[in-house]
Every structure is written in structure tokens, then in C-alpha cells.
Length: 227
Image 1 (spheres, rainbow, N blue to C red):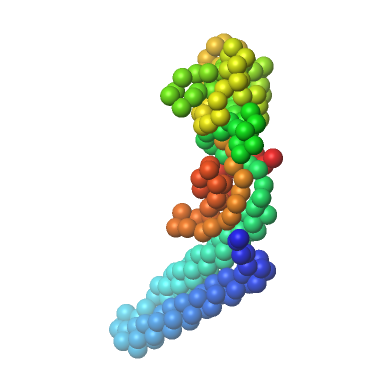
Image 2: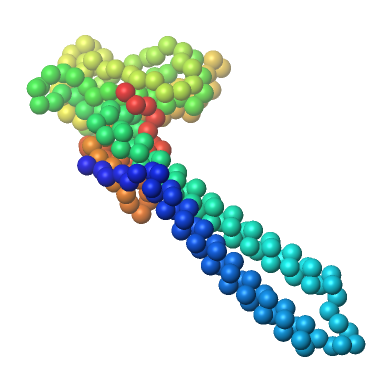
């Protein structure tokens, strides 16, 4: 079970921390600048005093540095808000069926029924021909499915658990291969999608991770379809 903090509290805390860091940094920078400026004025050559343009330029540089620091802290706070929003989205996915990049398909289950897990195809551009091949554990193609012309996008594909000859295939693990071509017969970029049920949400060094059971762990950005 994933615990997600209240987004309002988290964003407020992030903004408060950013403002505190900005104020401290601005105060330290201004103090050092004023100390340096006073020292320069006290020790300047009376016959060759500091040019007003130099003082103005130094003040402008200080303002630029402070502005950059404020911008960086604002971006940091916004990043924290986005993380909280992403966490809320991921928590709402727990228990949902999704499709993510992968080629695994499972046939059968505890009931012994000849039911294949859902899978899908991610088509980058429109295709006049799409061929889906089901391979057994040894890599042998046992079923080939020809699809009608498809537009670009993600769509689901169903397998009835039968081979090309109509015989029922044994329960177990299978893989999917997909090829596609346009009207001129040129290859079209395409990839298979595997099924998973979101069991939990976790954080890691690589960011937010969804536990999809047998489908493994995937990033929230890996989700191509929610069913």
C-alpha cells in the first residue's frame, strides 16, 4: 500500500523552504557586496575615484545573481509540486489493469481455462499491414494474426489461445513479436505491449515505480494504456 502526502501541504512546505533558502542566500550575498563596496570606497584613490558606472555595474550584477537564485528556488518548488501530483496519479492506479512495453503473454491460469492475458501494440505511425506473431517458450511461432490497416496509436489485441491449425495451445508463457509496414511496403516503427495489474507504488533512486506483478516494475511514464 502506498502512502501519499497531501499535495497542498507538500507544495507549501517546498515553497517555504525555497523562500527561506533564497532569503538567506540574498542576505549573505548583499552583506558581502556592501562590505566590499564600502571597503573599496574607503580605500579609493582620491585623485582617481571610482566611476559611477562601475558601481552601477556591480549593483546590476548583484541583482542578476539574486534573480537567478530566486528562479532556481522557484523551479525547485515547482518540481516538488509535480512530484506530489505524480504520486497522487500513481496511487489512483493501484488495482488497475495497464499495458506497458513488453512482449510477455501468459496462457491459462489457476482455473486451467484457455485464456490469454491481454496484450497490445504501440504503432508510431499509420500502417497498412500489421502482423502479430505468438511464440512459444522455444521461440517457435505458433500463431500469426494479420490485422487490418491501423492508425497510429495504441490498441489492444486478443489471442484465443489457439495455434494456426486451430488446436488449443498448452498453458504457459509465450512472447509476442510485431511487425508493420505502410502502403508502399516500408517498415513502420511498432512495439508490443504486455499486460500488468498495478499492485503497489514505490519510490526508488530512479523515481516513482509501479509494481505490476509478473510484468515487473515500471515507471509511471511506461504506461501506454489503462484498461
